[in-house]
Length: 636
Image 1 (spheres, one colour):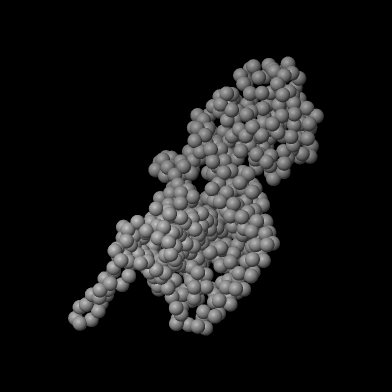
Image 2: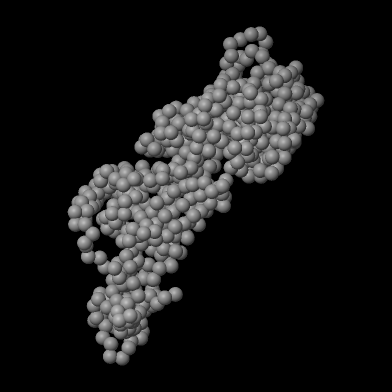
């Protein structure tokens, strides 16, 4: 059966021998491997913790006697030559379990062993006793055992490919492919090794190469997975159905494809089937995690957390399950627990979604612990609620300055459309929305209403996503929040692409002010996606508009004050025309408009937040500038 790669930073292959039967004392799966210090045959120090701290891709500890373990020793010699030595990608340490120094030196010479060998020390006694020879332990960089293989035969038959799988799960895809090739050359099971290579190509986004490898061995689970990655859900399901009935990973791929298609109940059934079938630990972990993701989407957050934790218990290096658990805990409002889980995920592997979500949660925790800020927010909420109720009672007959350009203030509201798509990684939509808000807030010409303030106000006013579709509600909220526009972020499918849509509603007209569309597949990472979208918004909404205002004071022509400033987008050096209503324009006996009469041209010399100071650079003869005269930027 195909075994998909395991994510791993440290692998310990231990082959141990003791005479006679004894209770199992070698660390079992999920337990911690004890540290040790020793001296090798060349009198060089060997410290497991120091080796771990150096962060090689793999550490292999080979416990042996001179009367056994030759097959493992030969395979480790291959890996040493491929990535050991000066390359430093793999560190291998052999531990002679019962033999003296002379016997160990002879053993190393006969097998041409290049890696370090040490004799058993009292510290290493903590690994004993063991019942059979050999034992292979796969251990994480936190020294947690992932897998334990005991005895010869199957336990050592695919050792090199096991290590290739570990490299793949650690994100070392190029190295995983090279080691998988070595596994084939060593005579290990070709289908398993080629599956490892195929999934390494898939992880790199090289789907054509992946499909080629899977096709060479007719790997239904691999071919189905490629179809899923291409967004061809029906094809993925069809291929998975062609697999043998006991192919657990094919059933997992089918469940994921059904979930992506929105068929959550069917997906749950397929994943339950996958969990009950024979499969490697990583396969069961992925199936359990996917079932948790379905429960999460169905609104069963408690059930989702339970599944995510079960997935991690099966495979401690399942970073996706840890990430999903963090997102679920965030949804439940348990930010401290969410941060703890995400920190654990981050320690295992660099993951952009994990890192970004953790940064957001840490920022939210800091804000929540700021007592003074909390008091200000509560006072602000009370004031905003009073303003909303007053404006709602007053109705639409309120005076509006329809000339002066308002500051670009955005308030992002929850969408009535919900999530729109099924993300394999929980919290993806929330992370993208929050990052977009942060990117826009970082621009001096845009202000985004604080998420905490907005969420609490909507809760106070008992306004849900459906109520926010009302133009009257949007109009009142815009005025209360002094927001120029309301933003709605949605996600949808366009063919095989996942699309991110941003709608901006003008709060004065309740009409669509702008709309933006981005394909998530067009960008290598979410940061570049959000940056591109934020730049588009700034270009169209801020830089693309014609600023207008009024003269506030014209007593000094070298210091004319206008009622717009930095928060509106005013910068030093901008030019503004001072204008007044000119001659009427008539048609059919009716006045349809008025010509503009240009009085003067002003140039901005100083900018404050809410106003700017200008000098008069040109003025019509006989014109006297005065308060409330209109100004505007010349058309670009």
